[in-house]
Amino acid sequence: MTEGPQFDSDFRRQFRELLVWRRDVRRFQCTPLPHGLLDELLALACLAPSVGLSEPWRFVQVDSPAARNAVTAEFERANGVALADLSGDRASLYAKLKLAGLREAPVHLAVFTDRSTAKGHGLGRQTMPETLDYSVVAAIHTLWLAARTVGVGLGWVSILDPQRVAAILDAPEGWSLTAYLCLGYPEEEMDLPELERASWEKRAGLRERILPR
Amino acid sequence: MTEGPQFDSDFRRQFRELLVWRRDVRRFQCTPLPHGLLDELLALACLAPSVGLSEPWRFVQVDSPAARNAVTAEFERANGVALADLSGDRASLYAKLKLAGLREAPVHLAVFTDRSTAKGHGLGRQTMPETLDYSVVAAIHTLWLAARTVGVGLGWVSILDPQRVAAILDAPEGWSLTAYLCLGYPEEEMDLPELERASWEKRAGLRERILPR
Image (tube, rainbow over all chains, first blue to last red; front, side, top):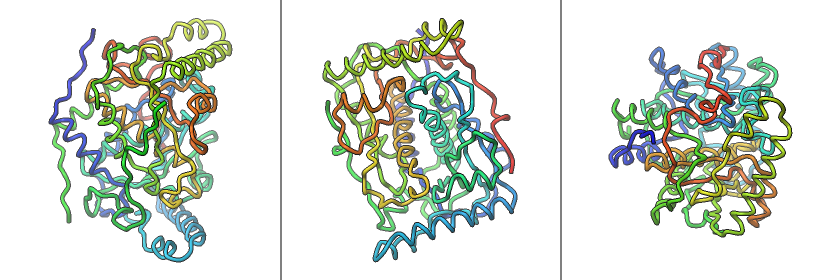
């Protein structure tokens, strides 16, 4: 039997801290990331699991001001529509939330799923083709945690039309937008979600989440 | 500015080891998990990010032999269909793969997305409703890593019809199956994916995965 690494209680304590202090960051400093750091983080993200070893993640690094501005405008459009669907106190509360840091974040990263990939030879995705997208989510979540280990924050912007963003970025045929991410150093660090601090929603307990069968 | 925890290079080295040695496990020992361990791991999983703080993850712990057997039979049915779609060398290779450890694994855990949840008040999921499922994937990936820190392996079984499994488990209305997981102590530990060792597929480099825009 091959022996892998053992993780001790000190590592596990710190790993829990990492989970506790990982935030969906919307308030970034403009400071750029050190050269090469993003590639190091993406290399870790690529260690994520993927269905059939399909590795369907594709990263688009959005640096041009034209593309950044177009995506930011698309976020503002979609956010306006979302606000218009609300009324009363919820609308007032929603209007006060800061839901993206697109203007300040030094890094914009669009993450796509290549649904046309032949890699993996289709294994494991006949009855649940969505596992291809789920593999990309696992890579994003890996990136998120890896970023936090070096003090870099990540914010996931989902208030935008994925097809419009794919068009703005001239994404290859067959690529589907899974997430649009901002990365950069956060203005502050917090162990409570910003939506909880802003009284939008609060965390629930575990007990009510488990059903026996 | 609030100061969060700092992670040093030793933690980062071990975190990378965790990513490298996390496997999709299909070969389990029958040894049960210590009492309470699964709940501890699930509590960590619940620290995952979720769209609008919706926390849509729902866990069904499948202990009854009848339900375990019915899910195993469903896997065998779907796996037979997948094999019948292949031919030649691919079919021979596929037939030799062990793609699930449903009979041996002490823990079966079905993970659902509650698509009917009002929690989060719809924030962030108007244009990309799939982010609700993606939140559950982040919780599963958190569970996966947390399990590995205590030497517990996890295997994700996607070769089954999600609606048939939901019916077998009599899942509440509005719950959609995101993943069916096996957990237990692995027979062996490996830093290479089993599909790579079995010559089904190999890992690709990062360079070809990044597009500039």
